[in-house]
Length: 336
Image 1 (cartoon, rainbow, N blue to C red):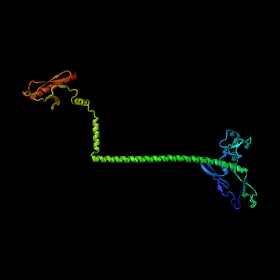
Image 2: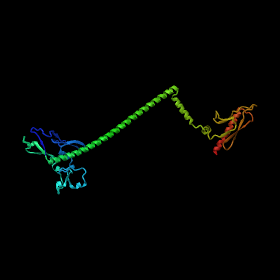
Image 3: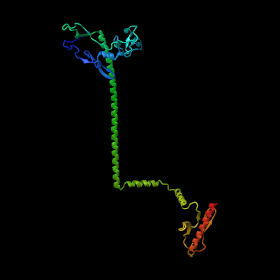
Image 4: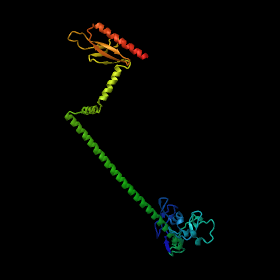
């Protein structure tokens, strides 16, 4: 049995510190338990510890349950309908009321842990209000509350340790990422500085060697010209397209056997005429006369006949007659 004595003027002889419970706001002169409730650390009295953890003990005999209880234990208890606490069957009797309510729920406003008053405990003062004792029942309740509080704080310490380790890992990872970021920035800055130096060196070399950006453009154009196809097939195709533009398909093709003849448009009529640019012979003969043989396959063969010299006007008339005959033949062929 533990005795707590107080003097007449209110001074505490033992357990002199008076604190207030964080839950019920009552003054507790003996002890406050540290617990974690809903993620918050609190200092509460023994009664509040038991009311906050009703499933951890028997509300009749205040025996704290071991966390790893066997399944057969559930058959030997009776559950409360309000706080879901478990009471021993031998504590509530073989015929408990149905539904069953534990003593804590029957009187929720009463203090579970109380100190018994001892009358005439102090012979000097003779005041019974200043002397209280902890009997066996109160000691059992205090022990249950202390054990539950210790379990709660152990769980809080384990959770805090896990959170600390997690934050340490996150801090190490963040430090690694920050170091990698700094290294990347340093590498990019060094690469940019090297590029700037190379550009300065290229400009200096270009100025000293008389080489500018134009040389690069000229070299690119030369390389592009080297890639152009210069085969005879391309040249032949271009000549063919040019010939089709100058001489459409409706004009009669001519095989010129003499290199001295050429076909040119007339300045007045715009029609093609045959001109002989061959030099005169040494015997005073005039220019040769061309004779046209028009066949059915729209081809005209030119044969050079050296019959003698003709005046320029007669030669022009002869050429005009030949052209008219060629056009007439072309019209007849198109009609057929």
